[in-house]
Image (cartoon, rainbow, N blue to C red):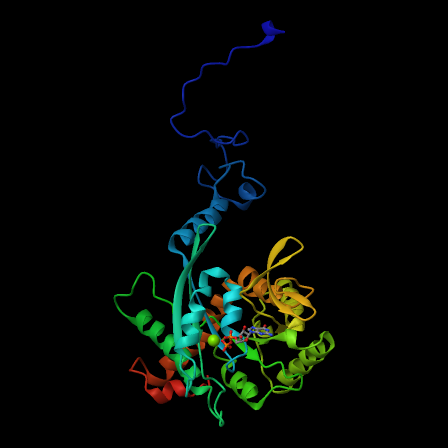
Length: 357
Ligand SMILES: Nc1nc2c(ncn2[C@@H]2O[C@H](COP(=O)(O)OP(=O)(O)O)[C@@H](O)[C@H]2O)c(=O)[nH]1
Ligand SMILES: [Mg+2]
């Protein structure tokens, strides 16, 4: 047996990296010469140039994104006590939970709507995300809540304006800081009856300027039947009022997108439960809320729709939320601003109050 082993042939090292074995050297008689990139040569693996390496662009983009990191700005709106801070902490787990006590004490009894943005860099799997949570304590807490959407709409427009100013600068920054609101989580009170006037007013005025994702707060306070009935009623009311929440039908890219988003739209608004407390269930530590009937596991899809919301916001639609913000909402704002002023002049407070964009 050993006699049959042929010693490896000694070959000179190539001056350039070797081409994959299937690559054939260009023939001098080839009709297009060495640069001929006729489709016949590229389809199904070129015999002319062999492997070009276009597919590595994905890896190149991945590396760049990993280095640069990215911004995600989420706004939370709803009456005090609906579990807004808790849910955001649950969404982004322990990384942001530290903020909750500071928020709680800072905004105990707000008299008017205050808007506070808190940023934190979260890193997972080598990817850095600068997460900014924009809290709106005081929203809907007044006796008269008329126009309480105004300060929020003003804030959203101010961020578009900031971005626009940077964009039209002659000496632009290589990367414009993005403070635009990519997603507005709107908390609906689990009344079991219907939406309040305040909810309708808010979503009506803002649904065309920001991505609104409505959620039913503290859904553990309703029975499964009540929850389903309430969800249906809310969906119906939104439809009757002409309120389109994210993901908006008109922005579906293709049939695949439409099918996927249809399922999500039918399941919305997600009935969620938030908690930053862990419990031991079947030997595993889970985030949950203890009730007289046992522990409601926040991340268990049989218990509530928190996991659906998390997957949708973070795992499947985060990039789309950013793209719709940039390509649709910001673009609408930008076109309006450039049209109305014939250029850019400082924006007045009144300009940002109205959201008839
Ligand atoms: N039953 C129930 N209670 C909740 C839920 N989420 C938060 N809470 C509780 O509701 C209270 C207010 O929560 P917080 O997150 O501060 O509400 P925020 O004012 O909207 O930010 C706290 O005592 C929370 O523990 C939930 O999903 N279900
Ligand atoms: Mg709060």
